[in-house]
Image (cartoon, rainbow, N blue to C red; front, side, top):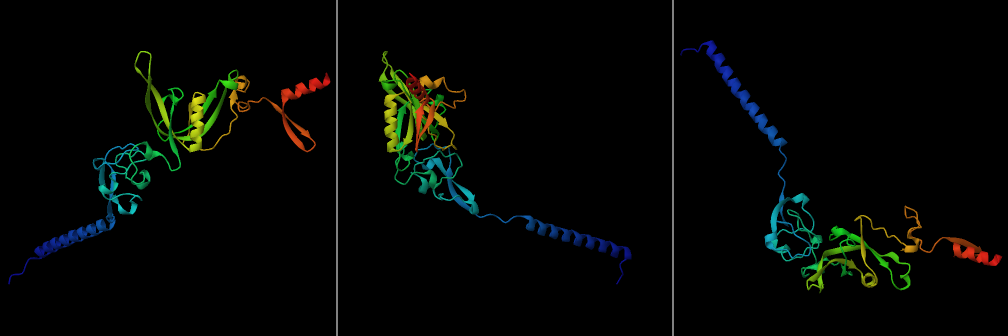
Length: 280
């Protein structure tokens, strides 16, 4: 048998060594990629809005779709099948791609419309406003407003009076109402705002709408602090400081009189008049 030359043995060793090296590097690269790749997350079906949906609307199947959601972060109160959510009425607007959740829906059996937006124990009451008193169209559903009413008749005919009569009312909706016709025969369209009130607040609001011209004051969504005011009369309006520090006191300045153990607040002008009368 003929022996192979040494150079051929060397060449074969180099080839086999290179092949083994490449195979080892490939195996190591595959193992590192497997270790670096995160484990696949388990997915779960969640019903989401396929388009923007307004409040007080009954959900339809064509408005919904099923999306795959990471199982570990699935929202609570969601639905997994379209049939479970179809027919339910929204109490809040839902954006496209947003999960349909139980807290955003009215109780089962609630019909579509304004009734779905009214909280338990509350009532929906619509009042007539104009563009200026309605904050120039900037009021939208779910805003919070105060109700200010000026009075210029009866005992206030000579000295008109204005005061905040209701605070922090939720706006359920805005719109227009067609009422009596104008002299030219065309219907008169009046802007309206529907507010959520308790029965007692509804009584005050109805009386305020009858007695004066309602103005709505838009307030911050985060501001729920009640503020007690005494109102302001026209006679006192221009006597207050520019900052309005004394606007809330419509009865004029007063002094504190201490008689033995009794403390009384007496109007300063009346006190001066009494003292002048005693001197005479």
